[in-house]
Length: 524
Image 1: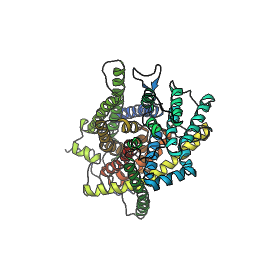
Image 2: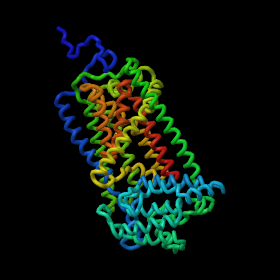
Image 3: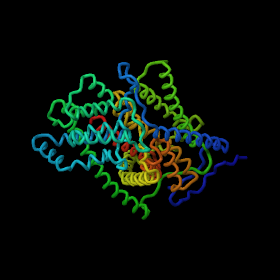
Image 4: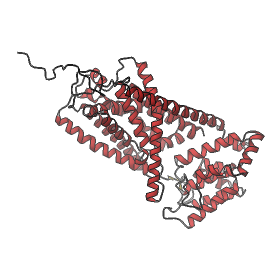
């Protein structure tokens, strides 16, 4: 007598908003492995989210000074990403506009008529008014911005800002932390420069060690870009200007095209011309939730490697620079891709796992690549909506707490600014290759499939998006754009069935962001 098939074939049925007719079977796994996978997922995710949130809110650490530095002083932490990006962009753009006699005359006219004051106020706030918010959140960043003010508005205006900073140090608000050792000397040296005094070589060297590009700018502030000393500091001004203009045009074009495509997609969906091709499994099974749990604990392992290496270095076990440590951790992160093969470890044939994870293109790879490009364009206005939500949340938080929340800190921005070419290539490989391939396979391939077998798209997509967003170190207030981006990726997975469009869209997003960081942080 034949043994009955535990999964007999069913007659094809069409479920609205689900996908094409299919024989649905649960994924591999038992109730016991499902429960264990949930426990591991919850514990691992909460741990990662907590650590990433703490990382995004942690203040930058000061770098120990060399042996020949002034006693009790430390080299201040590098400027925040906001200060570095805005300062270098503005200085390069305006110095490019000063080329030639006509350009210099127009620049001086804009300075005399106060046309530059609005831009300066947006960057520096008003040092005499603590309520006027500045992009600088530390005393060192405030004094660094005085160099930008000196270059754009003149040394007299920079001296006024230094006087206001000094007054605020003497009469701080409740939110003002006391300045670190060496700040008073920095204030004295910057003021001496703006008064036209010549600093001794030792003082100049000390100031450049502590403030880098900003100290160098202060020394040549207010000089025309044709001056050899100034030209060396802003030698890439035209490249930065062209890059900023091109990125701006691409961004505006992307918004217009994205809005058009998004409206078109909504209309096609409403009239039934755009049907989902994703085939959700029947409820049951756990192997793809297990895959996500394996990835999460692997991520914790990478964080553990970073902590261990840092402690060993501090203990004198070996000598390794900050960039060397970052490179070692980034190289370790590539190993997280092995989590993708967890279903194979659990006995799922690779051909079956590959299809379940979305690595297939029934209608051709090129078609899926195009779908990913169009999906990315559709996502641009949605990301802008997320950014608007972030601005609203920041405004509400500022109103409730009486102080603006700290800007997000990301390792990528610091690495792009300070990394060697080799480290920059390694970072680029993670951002442009690793993240699209591995994160999409884990989140939209495995995790979304698990949720989608139990929930409708309107629930599975946002749950996956939230988990995706909070595993990044952006902080709660700054996650809405990332959530919207993840919703776009989930929509592509639902629409096409394949994760190839998700990978393409993710790659495009990260490539654009990485290119912008290179132009604004590196070339500037």
